[in-house]
Length: 200
Image (cartoon, rainbow, N blue to C red; front, side, top):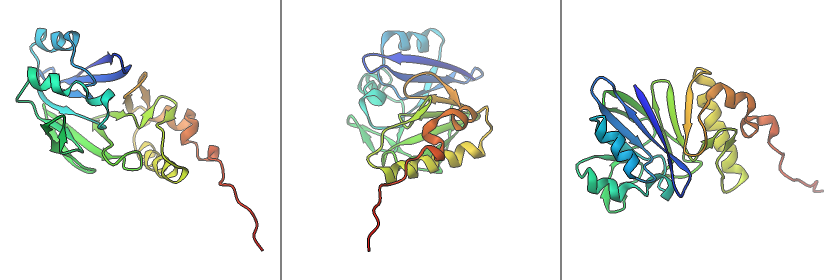
């Protein structure tokens, strides 16, 4: 397996290309753009795109889809949404397992963050999108869904090997063990109690 990561302007988000070195088939994750640099990487290495995976319906993760569909019109897009930019998608949901480019891709739903938010796990690497970046979790609408999201993330991180690599939608990669140890958002002792008053 070979992994390319590409910084997307102007969003400053990450697009990833995962390639099987045996078959030269690849998967694009979160195409925030499809610029010349990314296309040249695909074409000069003789790669074919077996599928596109989106972790969230948001411009930093999907703005490159219209261009991509013009350059690679037959490629399939996998998303929790059925339609993106007038492009029909193969709908995925929590618990799905996809066989793409010679990889087994596990789909992990993150509904506490957003209805259409998903992670993709390929072997010992996980693409977390906007849900988690190094040292923090993404923004949530209220404390209740924040607690649900923290519980969901901790559920997986405590099951996985500490060396499991996490590739976020923004910023540098990290590891599950490091996040459990140092991410203050995931440290349950750092959760502030709700305000309360005593009533007679």
